[in-house]
Length: 423
Image (cartoon, rainbow, N blue to C red; front, side, top):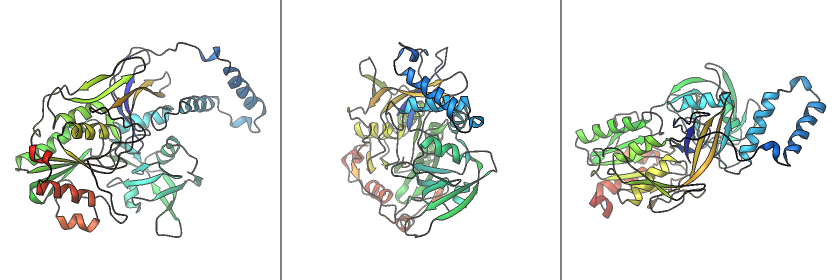
């Protein structure tokens, strides 16, 4: 999903990003600047169904067994959330109340107060993609593939991503209890984890054999493009022979950061993606930045099922323009342009206002982007973890079973791909 933030009255163009992993936010998406007004062609009170809403409100107010526990504001937030969810744009359009919106805005600056996990919702319970390095979740032993089946004693099976995110975040130092199901273990794990403030590095890099540099882009948060440029400078200044751009598990973020990232590898004027609004014609979104230093160095991009929004846009653009091979498995499947409106009380209404496709016209919506070379991760495999600046060996990759990274390294070291030879 791409998203643009629209001011509530003045049409201010302030981009934000939405993500389904809780390092970045609660929704899947990319954000672009947008403008416009709040207002509608019709009023809710003019619709016949509004009478049903009013009747339901009256019944709750008159008959709920614990009237002192009713909170009118929370009831209205629930109605607003249900309204947006009812459009069926799952994982894209959403309503965030003021508390959720505040945490979301902070996450766009690479800041998080919580336990520090990246999650994906593809089954009954939220699944851990990975704990964030240095987070309370990592210290508590949370592992990739863990299922969070309860939070504070509440079953997560029927929770929305927003509800899960709200429960996992909270005050710094406050505890949260989790019940974890782990593959291969018969008994669940009960953990108490203390929330902390977590600063997320958008970019990490490692030196691999053969002069290849692995650059992992964790999210397209504010400053990600500049951090990528610095990593590229390090690789090129050291005489790097190739770059592996790792977008696995990357939930997306600001579209201007996606443009800045893509501009490192693609020339000015290149189509990054195509979008079509509700009543308009398809419109090319082109790279309008000076071309970066990595225009010719051989390049491979890594993606997985948790690469979303901006990750899908960048990977598809590099693939469609013949700049890089894309290795991994089909991506998450965003594809909606989401305009984010600030509401009067600090809430956010994020509404899908357009569809985006790749430069070649492929839609990612609900199906994902197909890599040019499909490589699945083995059941006992894991992404290579490293400290930024570390030198890693082929043996390090083999020990963790990172088959996707191994395939990318082989491609660059053997230069068998025509697109790599031409790069």
